[in-house]
Length: 79
Length: 457
Image (cartoon, rainbow over all chains, first blue to last red; front, side):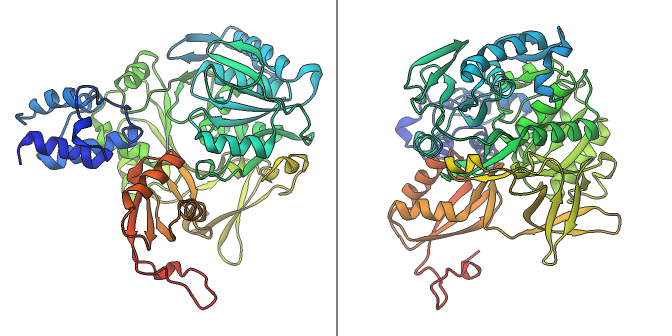
């Protein structure tokens, strides 16, 4: 599975959404499941999937599906 | 005197900084509150008002204005599910609703507007009889569709605010930042206890997972914050230990049991950062607070709920149930409008439904629950309500679980995703709290009663 696929899968599992919904409009609080609780679950799942530990600023600035890819790039996750 | 009647005494001191609106003084807040109050209690006639809250100035002014005018507010979350709102409307027939403009709650004549909020007449009038001592209504497990409310008096609110301000040592220099909705008893207790002492509330709608929350905390130099257990899990994930927040002096925890590990971790971190860490215990039925663990014992006695607040006392019933006595014990419950005419049913004694133990030092620890109830991210959920909800959808089920993890065992095989989504949508609680499992048959005894102990863990 490519990193892109793994990344998308985390969002699909965490928020129960389809891959088609995952684009630059998929941002924090755009679906009820992506609330603060969902955000915590998302970060935990991403850290597990990619074996990374994110910094506080990156966690609270992880505001959307596309934005998140740039963040993960800082931790060596290539897309 | 009730703190809400006495706001003017702090005059030009800043009562609140709304993240979107900026600072407002005590004098100005009282003024705004009273204009609304006058509209909601015309001619001094006591009326019931649904107050749809968010952490903003309008909600705060509305709440205070209604209390000051002796109207009776029912505080609800502005994000309440429309079906539940309708149920409450039909059950309690309020005279007015104070709500964000454009909210589904507003259907009648507009009586008054302030900022983004509108007071509308519902058309029910003031037909609902309200007991003279009734001052405020809060929901219990509001999110599962139960219309059950807790009835509170002015002296309940005043005494609990005073006790809290006392043991937390709140003074006018305090600046608590909101992390909880003000319609939730714990969130409201922070508001009340700080306004009592002339402190400054920092109101924000942002969550801990939002950059703007932390910017607001830093710019406004917040001195304290409170959190239910999942807030502490978030703080841990956000590496609270590595954050530099020099203004923060006090942290409180309530709204469910924090795991012993997490309690120890935060007790140690807070000690290192010279932050006082208070683990506390309460219920809406006791206005908010019943006990606290002094910060000096936070590490050593992790897992304990500590001692009763000033003015209150604990005892254990023969079956181990924790019984609380104090002036903050609510008048009782309401299940419909006719109950609002009732007086004090509890007589200052609350059977908490929690089973506890008391150690030699007089510190209490909760060891179980008598009721079939869980806390999901701080929200109290009756398992029976969830079972009824799922049954209404057409599926046979039995619920079990632990705090933050509710398991729905159903005989259905095909619609687990739909059941989970439905329950999350209805309760407004993140779907990660719910899991759906197939079971061949719901275990029942000969009398047909569900054997919850026979459900798989």
